[in-house]
Each structure stands twice: as C-alpha cells, then as structure tokens.
Length: 295
Image (cartoon, helix red, strand yellow):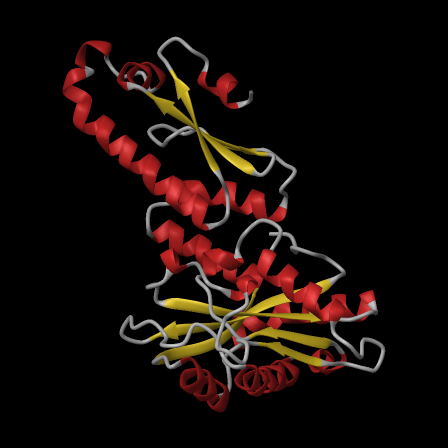
C-alpha cells in the first residue's frame, strides 16, 4: 500500500479499543483536555521516533469510527492541516496544536463524528505531524511506518488520560499510521466476508484517479471511478442472465436473488461509511452491464 501523502506529512491516529462495547460519554474534549492528551501522545511518539519532536504536532480532541478517517482525500486530517497552516507562530519552531470543543461545549463541525457510525468497539483520535522541511517530515513518516504497528502501545498514563477525558472504558490504546489502520480494516473486512470490497476502498484512498472493478460472481457488479462507485441494479431476469442462472428456474431462485439484494445494500452501506457515494445503475436482461457502468 502506498503512502497517502508522500513527502508532505505523517497521518496517524490514537486507536482506543473499548471495553464492554460502551460508547464514550464525551464526543470531544475541551481545549484544555485536548492539550493535555496531545502532550502525552506527542511524548509517546517522540520516544519511539525522536524526530517527532522536531515537527508540528496537530491533534484533534475528538474520536471517530475508523471509516470516517479512511475516506478519500483524508478529510479529517486535511482539516488538521488547514488549522495548522492558519495557527500563529509558524516560523517559531515546532508547535503543539490541539483542538477541542468550544467554551460552550459545541463540537466544531469538522470534528463532529457521524452519529450513524457510533457503537463500534474501536474509536480513533486523529493526529498529524508536519514541518517545513520535506526530507525531515518524510523521514519521520517512514520511521513511524516502521515502528508503530509493532511497538505503538500508548503509555499507561496516556491511556488513563484518554479514558478519563472521553469517559470511556478503554481496553487498549495504541498508535497507528493511517496505513496501519487501513491494513487492520482490510483484515477486519476479510473476517466479515467483505474482502472483495476492500480493493475498491483502497483504490479510492490511495489512487483515487484509478479505476477498480468488483466483477466476481456471485458478488454484485461494482465499478469505482472518478470518486464514486456504480453498482449494477439487476431485476430478477437481468440477474439470472448476468450470473448465468437457469432462466427456467428464476422463480425458484427468488430467495437467492433477495439475498443478493441484501448483499448489495450491505456493500453500499460500507462504501458510504467510507465517504464513497454509490450510484445504482438499472440493468435489464440483454444489456451489457459493464458498459452501462462506464457511462
């Protein structure tokens, strides 16, 4: 898997594995809490990769479902980058920049997690490392890729700070690069029977200008291109024709067809969680479904 933004910055998350499946009580930290947690996270990372201390460390005091981070264009990390560029003191040495809820408790829009994606056992807190020296930033990013997956457990006081601040029971707290997070999600989807879908998501993340197909029976027919996924929507006759079922048995295959439609809805929900719009393209028997998806 290629780096999401080579030579510009290092994108990562503090991953919080929740105990007992209970959601954190607080969606975001206050600015003061975000600063305290960011200080500990920066310290932990600098112990693993000393070059971290020479870069700006930008931290979002809010937690998200992993799919919200793994979206084309890396929108949450891009927002951190924008805030870093606007913050004062840019030419005064490495800065610690932490962002949390406002004084009124309101969570800024870019850091409001998708309410429909709560309830998962893993929440992630995004951070960004960046600097003006491309070679320095690249070296740190590459070093983090080497060490975080194997050695990236958060220190005990960092995990406790996160637990108390977010109001969550945390089983484990560790650091991932976004590449690590993507690899972990790929394995999770494999375990959930969604391995065939991951290449489309990975292409959208890492090579968004490329094209990727899912065309492997009995799975739905999908095409990723130009930032969206097109999915063939077959009526029963078209489904029988495309998947070479016996046309004389189409009525008896109704149950299998309904399972196919459920599979389509499942895949569409996963893609949309990753910020990929899904367009259903109606395909009838006798039509070239692949050609229709390229229009």
